[in-house]
Image (cartoon, rainbow, N blue to C red; front, top):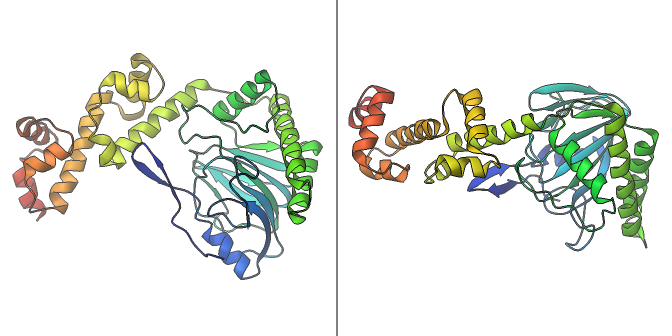
Length: 337
């Protein structure tokens, strides 16, 4: 069994790290946990074929007794993740919000949310999980549910809206949700006996109905505005982190369309997040990328760097560079050498 992976997914030219599972592999190898799972790709467990359990990336549980000296690294998943803590207590964080999971809690995390189990170590307990790839990596993308999901259109839309927009990550599981996860665990224990795939799909249908009921009963606040702002925040972070994104010939309408909103809403979110308009922020990102390239590549022509970073002319680049760094690009290179 492999011990570590450099797991990534690609999105608009970006390479975003997902769960490497290295701590889990090490804990399994050292006998600290017992893990039972069905999986596709790099996750631990029994490998499924591409046609089995459509959309399922990983489903299973692990059980650990006694003090645990390991925890999960901060990561994202290639899908919607739902976990259920059957026994024990564990620290859990989502986007810098910290929780202490208790027996009977379940969690929901979206593919774009950075999350972590352990602070830094997990506690003893039994944790179930499901990772379902619904075809999204960003908040504004359209979800694609698997064919085996048999909810009505209204219920599926309601569930999707709650999963998209609800800022809460931790919920109280009903007895029905607990029963479903235990049933899934039994199926995994006996895989690949006859008719288990059908039973798992039936249990997952019941799970999503019960999760929707739990959302309605617990009435946590939903905010489409928060999801829209998060979309813009991810886009702006991508411009700052990735030259391949910043060099694109963006216009303000194209930026807004990429984030799934109008220009006015996009500009409002930009001002709120970075205290600048979209094009002004793009120029600042390009300047910082160019400055980094000037430092890293002292023998490359400055004009070539400017063009590669998305500027249309060396004269304009020199002007805005001087405004930002209070010196010419050439003097900046000399200072940094």
